[in-house]
Length: 111
Length: 112
Image (tube, rainbow over all chains, first blue to last red):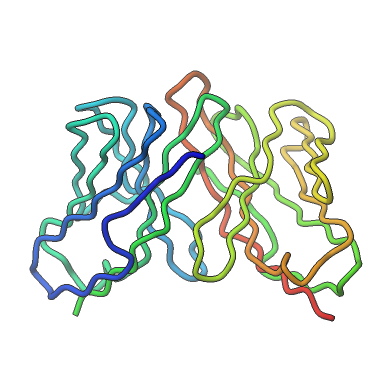
């Protein structure tokens, strides 16, 4: 079974802190994605990556950056956390059949 | 702009049939997917339609009409465990580099 893991299920940070969210997939997928999910807004794409070292902006990249140094790992970075970045963050990877496999999510609270 | 429209909430009773509609307006179209998400859980893949017609997987079926930019998810013999949010999503590019555009989700409540 495909497994996508995220480093934390719950995270509490303070405004201005630098935050790292890690995601690892074990199925050698090339494409990886970071979304945030907020009530009433659905899933919004922050960044995605087609390959190592490659990244593309999604719909809401402001305030975020990403890193893909290894194929299996895709990191989301909040350079200076703000309260409006309190959200559920979901990582996903895609197989050749265009199925997205999601991690369990990280619920981030910024105080 | 790109948008997917689906109802925000649907309620049905156990054993019934429910249809969740999705209309889309996107710059490209390479298939319509459906995902299920239970409260507190991650979305899980249900189905994918690249061509017009009906795809059936057990109690769930998904339909696509590309000429109408429309699809639906049909859930039959509803069970309490089907209570969840359902998202439609469009793949906007072909090849290996397309990403998904998600609708805002439909919250399905199944009553006894």
